Length: 337
Ligand code: SF4
Image 1 (cartoon, rainbow, N blue to C red):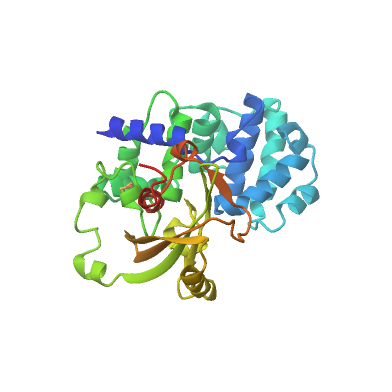
Image 2: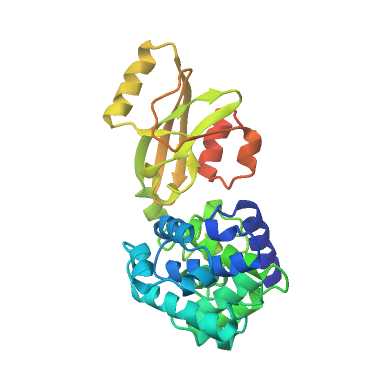
């Protein structure tokens, strides 16, 4: 069971991982530096917060050599706004020790890593796995939550035992990152998106009724009405991220306008008289914490939409991890089968 779960996580991660700057590297040295820097920045900080800081920091200081020769004042300046300044202090100290003791080479042994300032058990294991592909899994909040739910277990000791069983000989880096990615995108702390999860058939949390929303809660789910704006151009469809969609806000979607908003009311009026708009029908979709009633409205003209937005065809969408919510809309409007 454990190996089939690990295989699924590996396959999912390799296909759908987010495009993050520390996941792309020029060579091993660059990989080690990017993993070290990102792991320091990601301590107590979310990916989207750390992202611009990482990019800016790397633009100015792009190697361990350069970092070890930088002043604390400059490192602090680049860290400004990210908080927890002890990390900036420890990062610089760590780089100086690596320079002196390891001739600028990031150590690849647990005992050496954990002896460095700012590196605890989790960060040491994460570095070994992500930077060196070693057979390790660092247990942060995401990993702990995912493993706890999949196996319906509790207690640090037991969780660690199950984490051990998930380990793989090859592609350990992908497994570790896959577990974290699963926790960040799908197996969210408050509302896990079990219906969108590739592990829902293996997962005790999702199959255990005790954890599922009971009928009463289901009946109490709020109904939110939206208008989905469908705009197609050269076999591509307009997509963006939808802030209104709670747990699905990080996933791509067609533009959705709340029906009660001024914009929503305008669209409803337009629909009655403007021939450029066509009513494609209503769709009801239940997501974790509410029910959505969606009126699908197709327009022949591009609408006003804030950047970033995207145009994708059905083939391009296949390579993205899309929610079952979007899938249902795309099926309804016959964009995909
Ligand atoms: S099925 Fe649900 S609880 Fe289980 S891993 Fe996936 S999102 Fe988490």
